[in-house]
Length: 440
Image (cartoon, rainbow, N blue to C red):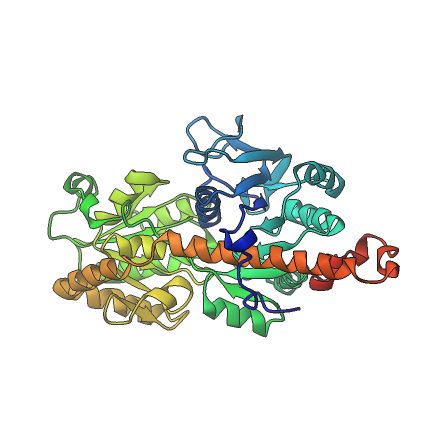
């Protein structure tokens, strides 16, 4: 299969700007669900719409408790602030194992096939790898549509945190089989690209992530919020944002904080997020402030009102909280992987430690607690380093890769029209587009 980097974006006739695309975008998580996949997927879709493309969004029916949080009461219908012109199609859903507040979608491939025969998309993009995505992949295959995919979540790495480590190889095989059936897989960092390539994934392209530096800014610092945490102006506040779950390695953070309290009794630990580990964390560290799930300007104020971002996760494919914290003016202590490895310059705008080295993680936190002026200088440089990390260039890269696949499909169709009639008699699996996609 040719590289996704090989072709330029198709131009319109006589040098006119490229025509808008019709893109079917498949995801099994979407706002108001709060997670990195949902929020970044919405950013990409919004960016495509702003560039004049037509997007049909396929996602599961969500449930809400009436306050914008996933729950077990009323269904959320099609909606999306700032996403005018988006067509949404909802599928039935069922709870995701270990994440019951999220729902996997389900649909028959034949249903999607009929739907797309009417809507006629140029391309299908799948952001997640669940049953709805498999149905979309099969339907697109039958119609000869190119399919691109995202690799966003290390589900195979999660298994060991839920005492089902024996499933890790099975899940990895599933993910590899899924992505090798698409025309190309997009990943957020070059380090992840290299890791997946070594594991047998193919046709990988790096599409990063952006950060909203207008929303996430040090200007949102709130002394009133700090006071609600019991923090005086000179007290250091450590912040961590994310799901309170085993795969986020939060027990290591709590252990480090309890050690640090011996020398920094006025320090505060604020955990933003919710999840199944909340009560265990509260029992182990009753001094911590559990701020719950936050979003929008409220979340941004929590970032800006802290002094240091402590991120112990070892399972991120990227970690959107990393650039959000840095844009908010926080020095970062994290393991040397995912977004931190890409964005943090060790000793300049944060500190990186070897993955899994809990002692080094604790020592790095202690170093920045011991030297507040150095910590503040790092935070300022972290903010400056995020000024060029906006979403425009990221979405433009995504758009270019989609156009390349549409052009490749068009070229395959053109070649097939001059080929032998024998190709036309071999059924769906021999559609010309199959030349650039392994069979499903």
